Length: 429
Image 1 (cartoon, rainbow, N blue to C red):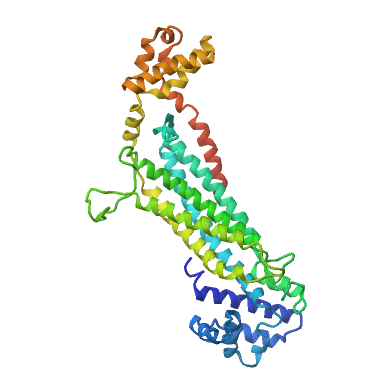
Image 2 (image 1 turned 30 degrees about the horizontal axis):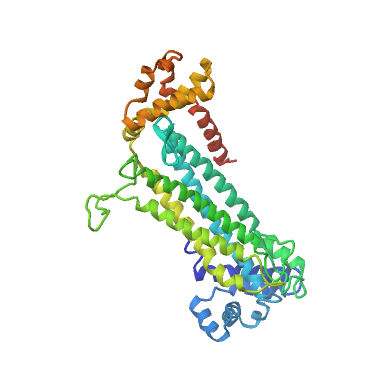
C-alpha cells in the first residue's frame, strides 16, 4: 500500500497514462507509429528528486514531470503529453492508483471476514450476557455477536466495491472537457489500454462526487472496525474481563505498572477511525468547485486519499490479528451472566403470565416487583419468583427458567452466515 502511494508510484501511474495516450494518438494516425514505439521503449519514470528539482523553478508538478521526462526522450519527446492538460494525466492516474489500492482493501476485508466468521463458529454456543444501555439485558452467544460483525463486514465490502467501481474511469478530454485539443476516440482507446471506462462527461477534472463516495465508503468501513474494537475494549475491562487482547511474550503493558495488559490495538483502531471520518468530510467538501474546476480539492486530496487507504489497510491488518488471537474467557462470560441474579428471565416470566390469562400490565407489575427486590437485595430472582404464589401458582417456572431458550434459534442465524460465506468463496473455472 505504501508503494502505491509513494512518489515513485504516483509518477509511474502518470507515465502509464502518458504512454497510453501516445499509443492512442498513434492508432488514430496523429503521432507517428515509430515515435510512439520509441516512447514506449525509452520512456522511464524520472526520479522524484529530479521532478522536485525542476518543480522548484516551475512551481507546477505535472509540468516538472513532463520536462523531466523530455530530458530522456530526444526528438520523439515532442509527442509526450501531446494535447493533454495536467488533470487528464493526474485524475486518470489517480484512478489507476485507487484501483490498485482498492484491491488491497478488499483483500483485507476478506481476511477480516474469514477470521471473524471462524471465531463466530467457534463460539456459536458460548453463552454471554447481552447488554443494552451497558446494562444486562438477556443472554446471547458470543458467536451470534461475531456473526453480526461478519454480516457488517460483508456490507462494507460491497459498499467499497461499489465506490471503487465508480472510480474506474479516466478522462482525456482536455482543458474544459470539450476535446478541443484531443479526441473522444483518443480517450476511449487510452482508457481501454488502462483498463478504465471513459468518463461520460468531464470538465477539466473528473467530478468529485466519485471521490467523496469512495472516501465515505472507506470511512464507514473504518467506523465498523471502530465499533468492533470498542466492543472488545468494553469486554476487556477488569470488571467484565470476558475477552483479552493477545499479549506477546516480553510485551509490556505499562512503563509503571507491571500487571497491565491493555487493549492498545483496539484503542488504536478506534483512534484511526476518527481520522478516516475526517477524511470523508474533506471528500464531501471537495465536491463543490468553481466552474469547470479550481484546484482547492487538489492539495486536500494529496493528503486524505493516500492517508485513508494507508490507515484503513493498517486497521484491517490489526483487526484481523486481534480477532485471530483474541482470548475468549467463556467461564467469565458465564459468571457474569449469573451475576445479575438471573434477572434476565424476567421477560420469560412476563410472557408466561400473559399466556396464563393476566393482563400485560398486571403481569409486568408482578414481575417488576420481584425483579427490583432481587436487584436491590442481591437475591436470586428465580427463588423470589418461586416463593411468590401469584407467579408460581400460575406458570411452570421450571420451563420458564430454561437457558436453552436463548440459543434455540442460533442455528438459523448461522445458516444465514453459511450462505454468506458460500457467496464469498471464489468460483474457479
